[in-house]
Length: 410
Image (cartoon, rainbow, N blue to C red):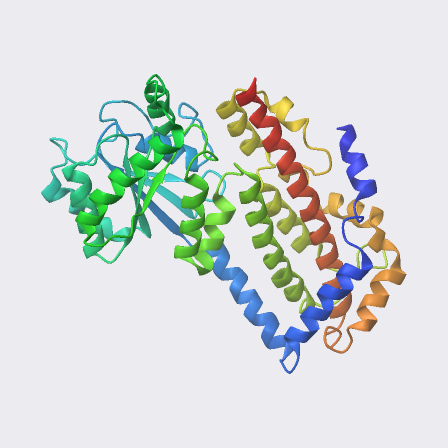
């Protein structure tokens, strides 16, 4: 595509020498009085842990409240796409269903059968769905707070697990209420929150509510951003990082969260590259591990939804063609286009290829980064290229998000 060439020739402008020098100075300060090989090994272990960390999310509630639609929305899928959780007003989930995230399979959403049906009586329900397995629970409701909601809240609390009460179909409720002459949306939403919170306080024996009003059709509306932030804070550590990577890029705020998480990852990857030694890039006066760059760039593309499968699912969800969404991508490749040859071409056309710049940085940070053969050169090359690539990917992901949102405005 024509815009790919433009991206390759302009890449490198996102990070100035001064910015990079300040960042590297912070790294030197962090490494002061520390053994670099030990720091490298710790970061390598951290990367391995992130890659193997699992996250199991249980979606539960009574039948017909929109559990399956929420499972699909959290996976960035339309309700009727291939691999989507089956939806319907009647009981469609007859046993717990496992739905791995289509891009990050270590993240699994479990669509649990509705409690209170003849097949799933309250007294037997918790054992039937293997409640001990999950990291946290989302109790889904769409209208009244029920006895079964009360039971679920109490039993989950007894197990010492966290749960979040989600009121779905808020957009449909607003459409219905809007017909009243005295309707004020903010007051109506607060009325729902108060009703749910008061009932939850009775069920849990405490006054702090955990109520989130959402629309499965548009996650950036109402309380879903707050739910995302709450989950992130409550999970903490590696599971929080896994959640951020897997969430669909539905808002500018989540894109910024993803960028922050990837920035932290770049530090770890660049440090690990120090321990690999000097691997000359064919035809260039640079050293780095091309394989690390290829794998990380592909990962960035997937985290920000810039791969063919993600675009196809988004296109189906918003009713636009893949070509229309892809037209918004000005600088970045698709994940499948990131190859060894692509990265070498990127390095060739990067401003980093001017060897004076990379050598200046490497010399400045010897012996801290130069204590391993080629460590300084490898760190600078890896850090600079990934940082600049991430800048482009985030920008294009925002372009795609804006293009997808146009379908809601027209």
